Structure formats: C-alpha cells, structure tokens
Image (cartoon, rainbow, N blue to C red; front, side, top):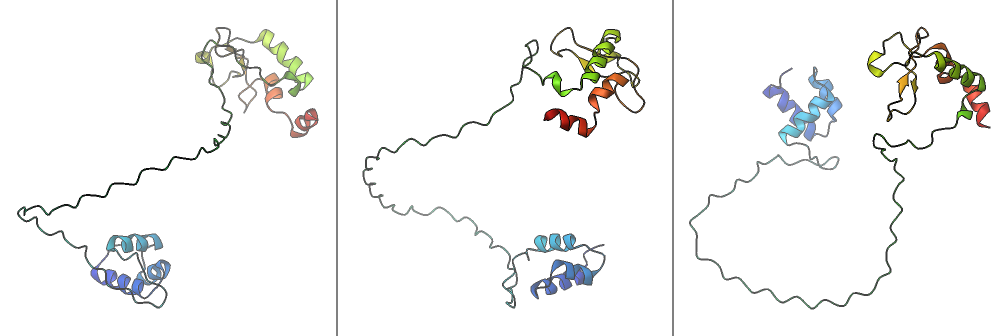
Length: 194
C-alpha cells in the first residue's frame, strides 16, 4: 500500500474531524491502525484539540534567520550579589534502607555454601542414587552424549567433579535412578515438607 496524495488528504481530513485511527484505517482500506498512527506522527498531526474543537493547520517550524554581521555588543547589567546563605539547621541523619540480599558469586576453587539437605529426597531414591554412583561411568562434560545420564556429581569447582554417564531412560536426560530423584510426584514432595 502506498500513501497517495488522495489517501493522505483523506487521513488529514478524518484526523482533524476527530476520527480514531481504527476508523481511518477501515475507510482507507489496506492499512492497519498502527500504519495510520505512524503516518499521523510523520505528518506532524499528532496533537488534536478537545472533542468538537477544530484543530489549526500544522504550520511549518520557523526557520532561523540568517546570521548578520556582528554589531556592537550590548551593555550587560551587573548581576546583583546573592544573599549570604543562612546556616543550615542540623537535620537528623536519614536512615538508609538495608541493601537487598544478594547471592554471592563464588570464585572457582572455593568451597560452595551448604546445599539443600538430603531429607528433601525420598529415602528410596537416595539409596538407589548411592548405588548407581558406585557403578557410574564418571564422564566429563565433553564425554556426554544424548544417550548418557547427565546427572552432575560433586562440586563443579573441584577436580573431583563428574557426570553419571549410565544409559538414559528414554525421553529423559538421566538414568533410571536419577530420574527417580529429579522427577518426583508433587504429592510426595508436599508430604516431605510437612
């Protein structure tokens, strides 16, 4: 769709009559409400008067006058000296609000803060997890594939960090034992929190 002179005139007329952008778009056809609003802004028609009030035609911005040869400078009046400042009353210090708690970034090689306790995991899943970790393949990140368990074990900031690496349960990123830990029914989790 192109903005022909006729369509622009229709837009200007309807806009000054107080029609909405949706109404104008419907009459013009082939344009959206947003296209009408954009054209109104580009034409400089965006300021409308109150309802029923005629809007004056948009006048072009005044052009700056050309610079004339420098004339003699006008005398400048000396500014009056400012009154002396009054001594400030001692105000009570404004208490600063406490800073929001931030999670600390722990540099590599430093011990991690205590993690959530193991009592959040069902005892059956925890026992199964320990047994699986005994026979795990202990893979590095680069050795993982789409068919290996991606359960992380240990602290990533230490040398003794590895992934389980046992065969995955179909459709899951973990082996059967780690799926039992990661994907627990909602009711089981809710019961343990009580």
